Image (cartoon, rainbow, N blue to C red; front, top):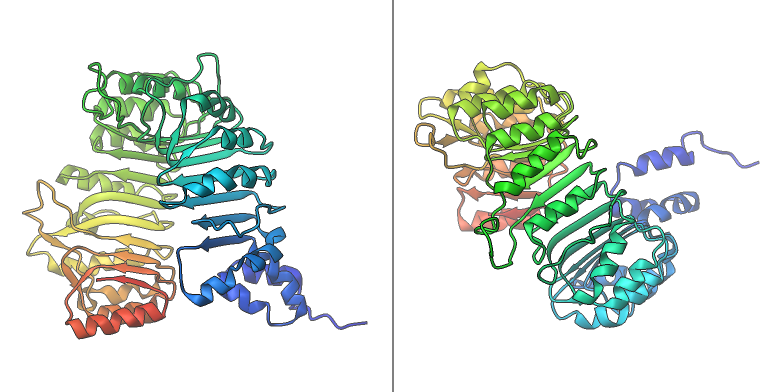
Length: 488
């Protein structure tokens, strides 16, 4: 009987794999045959292939014959600029993400429909094209996918002959994402169609469908949970409702009323762009049974803060625009009241409000975009702000870029990411991935080297720095050797 190491069970290997990225998983293949059998499916189940890359080692890793050998292991495939030499069938694939650059029109004509038909297990399909229309044979192929639940189209055009096929496909979807997609002018969803299954809907810069008809489409999705609606139509305005293309006016007001009437009882996530009143925004918040993600943009004030209070325990993502001392205090209060918050974009907050306010409870924050603002006489508050940030131990993305506000002249100094200001307090933020400091020259050589030493997961830094050209080149090469993008 062979001896089994109790510390080398499959379950333990799989637990290890959860913390490893693809290059590290590939190294695990060389440990022994049992590890090879465990880790090989994990190496290949999520794959990104970029044919625009020319480095030889990368191209050798994804030669058509290599991809063909392991195609039965692939579940999630992300492809940039397809090559016709690759296999068209992946037996276990569930998600296909396609990015087609300019000049790739022959691929659409020859390969896309066979690729879709050859992968009947597809559940999610994302297509992005820079210069191509989708033709009837592609839509017919999509109609044949029995398990398709998510469709994402970006920078695409849909022809008039394919409109009925498109709406028919939508009836079986749970998620539909349209960004910069053009339809024939005057396109409307069929009046009798109801999209009961759609839970997530994104309409961003969709042209050819008037704002009124987009609203009717949204109304035909009664089980919506997540809605993103950015309506800047390219149709020539023919009435007062179109205006300059910006969203707002009667249809937004009608949308607010419908939320209040519980038209979408499951709605928990909402992102909308346009010009509307704070009263309409309050009507929406009060009409939603639970708010988990919301973008308040320029309509954030005391009224929306009060309406949002009953949702504080459930709030996961929030985007607001703070441009006054009043909204700065409200933003600080949000950080003291939302324990489930993971992503916050908040404009500007005065450092004195943070220091004088209650302790933050949003300790689950992973992404924070806030400009901490100081007067010329408040430099002594910088270390105290770093102490607050140090408590956000799960933080991965931090942007402290400077903003221009009506009270900017009174508080012109942003957070200085300098060691002498207290940056070393953030040494415990071991999950930090990306950093975008203010536009001032707030970073120096010592700070960049400190980040390399303490933030092992760092992938991107974008900042203006106070260093000479020789040091700049040296640091850029050093960061590149660690796989970190350094934009100076």
